Amino acid sequence: MTDRSRPDRDRLKVTFDTVADRYHQARPSYPDELYDALISLAKLEPGARLLEVGCGTGKATLPLAERGFSITCVEPGPQLADAAARNLARFDRVQIQHRSFEDWQPADVPPFDLVYAATAWHWIDPSVGYELAWRSLRPGGHLAIWGAWHVFPADGDPFFRELQEVYNEIGAGMGEGNWYYAAGELRGDRAAIEGSGLFTGTDIRHFDWELRYTAEEYIALLGTFSSHIDMADWQRDRLFSEIRRRLAARPDGRLRRHWGSVLEVAQRSDAAAHSE
Image 1: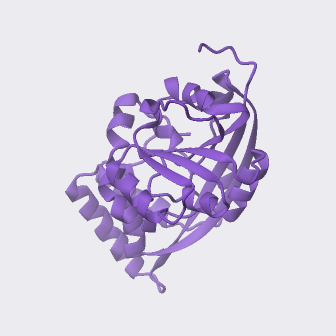
Image 2: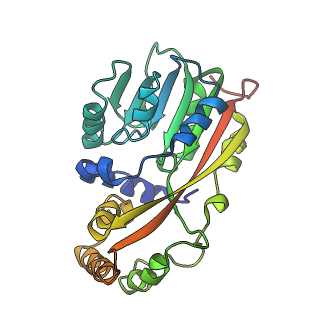
Image 3: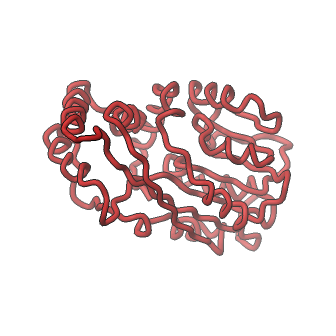
């Protein structure tokens, strides 16, 4: 869904570790309906073994741990991995491993029923990601990818389009080729998933939800995005001061942000040509 060059991907993907203390609170939770669909589409039985790629602080781990699954999480950020370990400490069947998925090559680990990534797969090197997922799965297992993205329904809050003038002013505008997608218009990774030759039969489900934010809540959220973490101090100061000013002029002092998610669940192709 997100096209990033490798230098940008490698540089920006480590920025989240600097805000691990804020990430868990500021980032939105995914809707329960998404997990229900995931379990159904991936045919997960009680006690199934899951491998999570890039668990962060455990936002997507927690709901699945609460449903009784056994989960191994790989997370390259040391601060994020520590936060996930704290957030998931009460679950004996969850293991957090501080390492990147690309470098994760465990010995004598039984294959998993599901490999999944929540708002993390776009940081994985696609030249090796699908191969590693394939190798980690049992025959008939599944790969699931989803995220949480800003979407713009017809009746959405105009705040964000209006704020683009500030982004343009500080040199951080969306630029050409970026669009305001509604939830059902979000582009997924189906072409890449099936184009790998290792997965087939991709099922797709769309979800959307709305959250309301005060100025400080929204600024805290923006502070967990790589694009904003990577800004110069003067850029953030200008942007955040303008968000505060504009929301202070609203009667309730809040904005409405719509979130969208594309859940894609594909089955391991056991007939795939594959080098061992």
